[in-house]
Image (cartoon, rainbow, N blue to C red; front, side, top):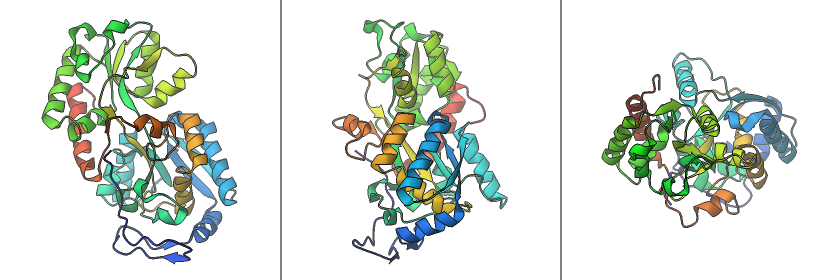
Length: 349
């Protein structure tokens, strides 16, 4: 499986009071874990931006987990995401004006934080100090990957006959789906195919062909709800946050799981440069990669990491062809996300 990683040089094992990472200019000099905890205790608060699927109880459960693990009493303010592209653009605009970020830690997909990396708007940190596996440290030490979405076409099993279930991505172009097919504004899903398995030409032609299907446009959540109501039979892409949450309630919307390759965006936790409470944020980011953090995120958002042994995503990934973004692909995905949004009819991306 391909993945993008932060710099790894200068890694020392054993008991270390202070670490200076050699050869990784993106990493700041890092104090010991005890020093980070002590600084976090003084900060005492976190402005936490995360997907709305996490919910307030889920965010509070994470705060309780962090407080228990590190002996803290952090107060959490949960900021559910609206439109991740717009919120990232807002942060970039504020930074250009010298205004500090609203949030201490942002949990988004890897593609959404690409502009922060390209503009050097991540607060870098050597998360290895907090026990984070180097292979999930991303964007030159600016973020940590803690979960992977599973993204595939989805359908309403009560309304789609077994013989009509899509077996390939190209099956979505069948005229029988005209007027019954939806696409979401998560256009980075399709952009990932362009830098991965398919290449840009094939993917762009596929996106253009989709427009001949009289597509219904919407966000992920509303598209999922329209599928529940039977207004939409098939969605070009859907992620497992919606699928898993609905499955536990007996919802009829499921993946077309024969389709390959599987798009697997990463959820990442990144600290914006200038954050008011960075040490609390570092601890939250690290906690998300622990077994306790994984259990909480899975219970509330239905996703786990494909790189942490024992998780559901790790088990799912074995033997599968996954489309995983590499660091150098981030800017291309960002560009194509906008381009595909325009082709499909989404404004303001």
